[in-house]
Image 1 (cartoon, one colour):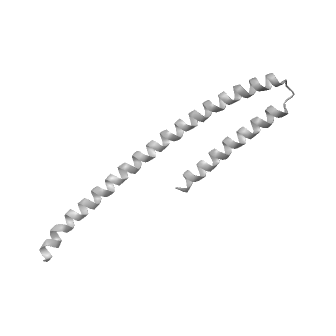
Image 2 (cartoon, one colour):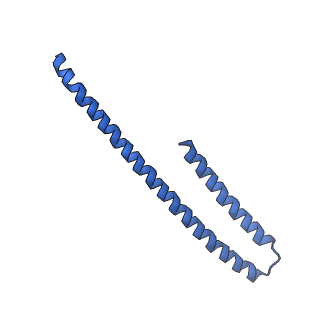
Image 3 (cartoon, helix red, strand yellow):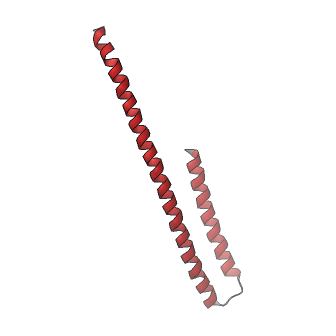
Length: 95
């Protein structure tokens, strides 16, 4: 479970670092205001698209993990039912 937390922290740090770097590069670049605004607009569109791709990938991975958890839960319930079914006849003969 901690691997998922570490990956989430890494992803957040990566995005924040990327945004900070892009902002610094844009503000320190020797361009006119109009060129800078156009560049900011282009980079924001690019960043939005990358964020959407990452969100889709994370959602897909979350669905896979949820399906695995559901399957494991069903297997655990089936195992408990089998164990109870095996123990029940033995309990009724003890009475």
